[in-house]
Image 1: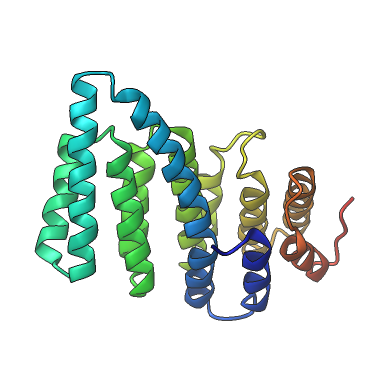
Image 2: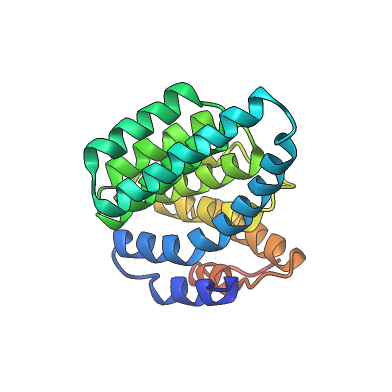
Length: 222
């Protein structure tokens, strides 16, 4: 699995490329890394819920529909994908699997270059997500797509929901900096990059990409 350091290096290389290409690389580098941890956490939660009667039945059924959706996507069965997505959304709107389904559909849309479809799927994920990790991941991805679509104001609105203790803080501040830079608010962009740099260093994460962006604006880590 790609490490955070390798993901940062790839993103730095793509910094001046087309927005869609950069988004695809970001998705490949960060997506599996973040989702793997989330799925592991969800497995623990659902394991505990195994003893909760009716809730258990619903979780298992939702998991079955999610797996069927995954298979339908691999086969390119559009009709089944649409039907299974609708079933998950209507019958299991509070299930993590309904959110994961939208994240999967969004990733496929990005791979196909359909950012409108990706944004719509991610907005559904944000609206349905009740658990903090999935909600946070959905918002980060939504903001990334909004930035790729030249919607920096919308991206800033999406990123306002994070608190300072969020484990996504370095990436959130980096995306805020990108949005503010796109709006020409360069002083605020520097502040966001500086906040992201401090958060990354506090979490002992590789911060070279944030440093690159900060240096490009003529800022420092103070």
